[in-house]
Length: 288
Image (cartoon, rainbow, N blue to C red; front, side, top):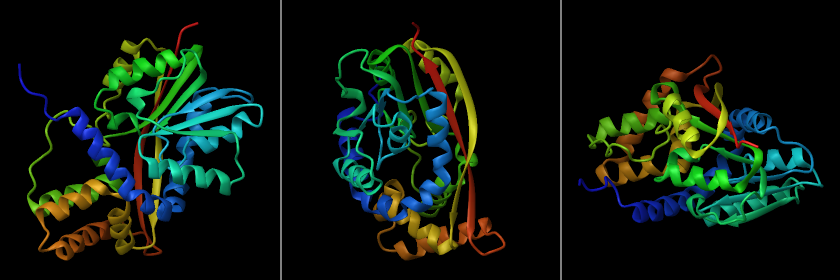
């Protein structure tokens, strides 16, 4: 038997630490991120057929989406439970809910693969850009399936292939080339590890879901300048920052300048930079 390409527990620990480190950056850039991303939250809520009075679970909520969007939909007679493994992200999500006057969300720091609520607790489960970071997707999907009431929906968003998501992939590809870093081991969770819709549907089907549907949405990230894009990446792109520090500690400024130059290609008329990114939405239903 061959060895696993990575240690599951070590990976999860590093992942948790990385998300906590970039949580201030997510708070700083949230208006930019959400201006483009809100369309995905809205669509996930629609795909999951969320209605007033329902009980909804949002896993890997980050700093609060689509939990906040779902909370508005279920209203005062409903409830959203928002979970994330990173405590600093959960703290920011709770802060955002208070700022928005939303009080029907319960926040819980827990790993998606270890959620242990009673079976059949939720009318719907949501996950925006979280499933692709799970080392053990089958276990997680099986757990989420059990948490749903019969007839309930799981709606999730992932990213398409790197070439169709330049807002995320550009900096990583440029830095990897600049520092001549080796490619990551095959099968390692990444933003793009669930870009194959056929395999994504198969994963849902194997977990027991039916009535599967996928569609694609354009997510626009617009920043004031190429330099702003580089700052954006430094603040929220933990894997890219780690790559630079590990492989180019003596020429960090030079490498970040290369990222800025690459972003010049995405300039629009007002000198800002605009990235069109393709997101995949999938929904499946737990049979009655």
